[in-house]
Amino acid sequence: MRTLWRIAKEAVRYKGWLFLAILGTFLLTGVNLIAPRIMANMTGLVAEGVTQEKLVTIIWMAGSLLLLFLVRILFRFLSSYCSHRAAWKLVLELRMKAYNAIQSFSMDYFHNKQTGELLSRVMNDVATFELIYAHITPDIITNFVTLTGVTIILFSLNPQLALVTCIPIPLILISGWFFSKKVRPNFKKMQKSQGELSAQLQDNLSGIQEIQAFSRQSSASEKVLKKGEDFTRNMLRALKLNAIFHPSVEFMTSIGSVIVVGFGGYFAYKNQLSVSDVVAFLLYLALFYAPITGLASLLESAQHSLAGAERVIEILDAPNSITNKTDAKKIGKALGRISFENVSFSYIKDVPVLKDVSFDIKAGQMVALVGATGVGKTTLSQLIARFYDPTNGKVCLDGNDLRDLEIENLRKNISLVLQDTFLFNGTIEENIAFAKPDASFNEIESAAKIARIHDDIKQMPDQYNTQIGERGVKLSGGQKQRIAIARAVLCQAPVLILDEATASVDVRTEAQIQQAINEIAGTRTIIIIAHRLSTVRNANTIIVFEKGHIVQSGSHDELINQDGLYQKLCKVQEVS
Image 1 (cartoon, rainbow, N blue to C red):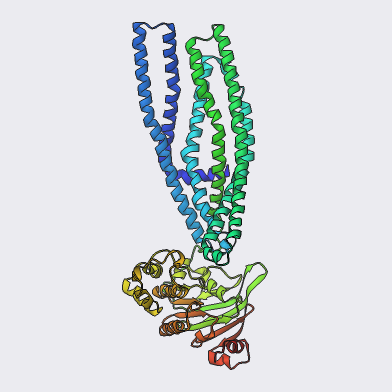
Image 2: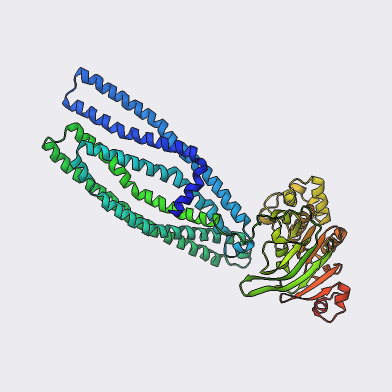
């Protein structure tokens, strides 16, 4: 009921269209209830013998039936189109709600989630709301009204015969309740396994080059097969219950038909029922059992839809650890002063990545963070952009705790070049302008020159309009990295974070990029995360990390002359 209530709350904005759909459904059901009565009366008149006077009446009845069937087209249109319009509008809205919710979640939400599984929820599970509003809800209304109307009519024709007609109903209701209790968990498992299958396919397709490079096609195929078998097994369990339930309901309704035929014949023999009433009873009997027989498929669709709806609601109601405070501040364009005050952080509880880290970066300074892999350098950049909040301590921008600032305003002040470069399927120009959609072509070209990618672009056939493919597959690693740098430079944020920004380029290009970084030094705060120590010699301050702690801090000249970790790292890399 909680799920149903939540679904109803989501649909309230489309109550106008839903009202028209319900009105059309009621009117359509009314036509379906009137038509058999007219046909039964026509049969009675024919059975009594057709006179000229009765022929006129029959013609009028036939005309009335024709009019009813014509009007039924309009009512069916109202019922079908209006419900589908409301349903698909709701699906679009919920799909965007689910996507926007996922888009706003902090990075820790994605630690245990796969892209394909989330994609399945946004696409497949959200689509089940269309079933609820365009099919299940109208069917429930139609079945309820039809059953109520037919029951009244049958009892008015012959209460005794109507009573025996109801004998199978308790059995059908009990079996329906039992079916819904059993099949719903199976549908939920089925949709979960469908999401896992989508996730595995997405994972394999994204890593297709690695799969082929290491000749792992067989094992990759086995993983897809395993997920596919899980999905098929869960689907077949649900279908097995359906295969039992559907024939059972049909059998029970058939018993009702046999009872009615037998008792109806007996009452006709006793002259307690007229021919027209017997015909009416038989015509209405099909209408009476149709909703009950349809209960099987209705329950199947309902359980399928509710299972999907629950998975969507899980996303909509999922807590977000990174949110704006009610009184979050906007600071406009920041100066770029960053400070860490006794910051500790853990991705996994009791497994610290950073331990009591404190340092200050003045506005306009270039600061390098160095150390072995896994000491927390990238984590620091994630904290500055507030993808995560510290476990203890605080990170400040211009003296403001990041948790007190509006998230969007904060991130407009920060440009990131991440270690794992991501480019979108589109043109080079679109990818560079991603950080500043309203940038002029001259600004885009200028940023590309700073990133030392302009010359490469000019040599391509379509230059800045070159399509780069999914994740920039048509470019080299160095080209992708330099486009990412151009993107970060373009938005001219006061804080620029370069996380291994020159890791995929050759020595000559690295020197060019380093020259470009030196050119913009002083105009913004620059934080460089690097393993190549040759790229950080010009930094105002170099902060050396070991096991989540700061062990050294100073300029290159100061640290190279100290007997410490930095000196050892420089000796290994032959940096003087």
